Figure 1 (cartoon, rainbow over the protein chains, first blue to last red):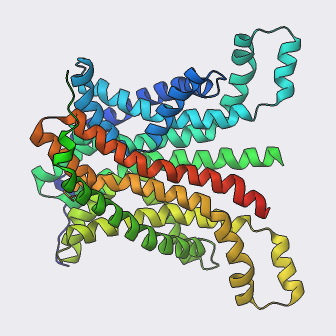
Figure 2 (cartoon, rainbow over the protein chains, first blue to last red; figure 1 turned 90 degrees about the vertical axis):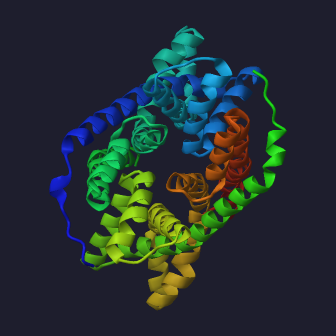
Figure 3 (cartoon, rainbow over the protein chains, first blue to last red; figure 1 turned 180 degrees about the horizontal axis):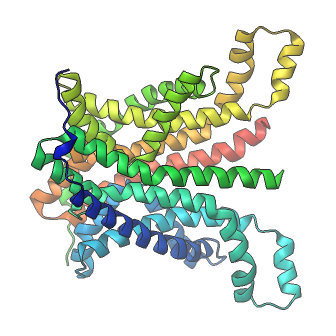
Length: 220
Length: 221
């Protein structure tokens, strides 16, 4: 191969700006996902079918369609169907947040089911009402048990957030694409962009691995 | 606003062609990716430090970066580096196979690890040679245990395959977006595209939990 690499021509300022947008998207989507996911998990486990079925449909729909389809659908169809016109950043956050909500709901459901029956019985014996039982017994236990999966899903959304570049949100991926066309240096640009994504997500996956190993040790 | 879903009927041939492309791509990459994943899974548990390091870096890198950037990298950079022209399909297959290989290697590794040490002890007690230990004792159990996770990896791949539309491959998503841009009826077209993906992926995810619950419980492994 006779390609001479030139990493000098890559300016980092736009990439840095892009990374900030990406991190902002990730953080906001995670807030929606972590809070909304728990509420959604409670709805899925509700004994009332009218509440349970729509919630299940929501979860399955987001889990069984490609994220890119969801994002494009959101950007094109929500303004037309509901007559709401939000900024592209808000739309991106909502699309990614709903996606994460569905995945987190499944994680919460598994750990809510794992909360020991005795603990809830103890709550009843102490005279806590259903709301208090959820708030003081189910939520803390289930949340702690779900942390590794929540982190994995959260970093998954960090990676999926690259998709909003397709609908022209100026995130890291979008800045990378622009820079690659401006400088005619796709190899260098895309390599640097990939390394930036990697540098953020790799430490988090290491933390997840550590947490899981520690939990296994505690359980055994 | 008035929705008119009959528009889909006019474009059903194009959508079916796109769907065929998506399925073809998924199928090829499932086969190649699972083979690659199995080999990488073995390499990660090998005794050679070099094999372990290389396969470890490969898996971490492909799991730690967005699939979209992997696709872009292979579409734009691989031809420059190799100095050869790659067809759209070839680039798509390479990118998604590498992604699938990385995620299935973790599945295989976990299932290889889950075969208990007492099984190996039994092999040694029976005096089985190393080759028989692997092919007749460890492998069957590991593969059987890997099946549910492998299936959900396949569903992930099927969903990620929609990304190739971003680099101009005529898959279901690409065809859908084209039609919606030309007809200016994104609500109908994109909803149908999403439904098609859902109709294929949903039964597969049901199958995963069915296999997990019934078959593996019955086999008691």
